[in-house]
Length: 163
Image 1 (cartoon, rainbow, N blue to C red):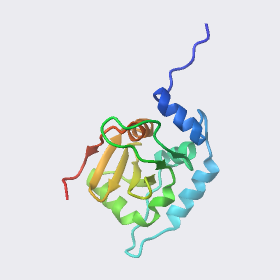
Image 2: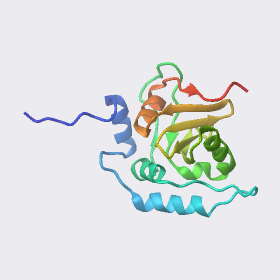
Image 3: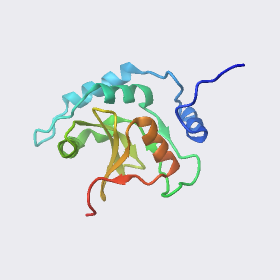
Image 4: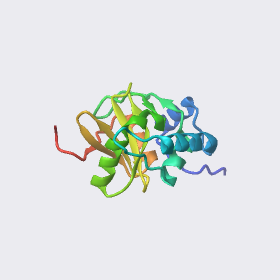
């Protein structure tokens, strides 16, 4: 019998990722390093700098450049398109630095939800967050779970009190 390894994603999520250009083993380290260099070179007017670390670079190398749209209506909330592009958070060094200090880690930009409604971020452990005008949200302990939550419309966990 031919044994397939278990998929990292639920079937509809994996199909959507593949449609967007992802496949197991996808690895564009050249693009990830270009993003890392651009983030390292950027300093906000207030002197804030971006953190760049292996978990972020690995996520960018595997999923960078993808734009995915949910395959179906959400379970608890309406899913929005997701774009993995760390430069969408280029001008948020202070915001991401503040979140990192609050979580006692470093946080780097990962991409965005919708047309800039929220910025996605990843920490040194690979945990993924969403930051929008209503607060900071925890999407999962690693990018696979975060992408699954985003594409299935699973309600994230609020990290900050309502504004």
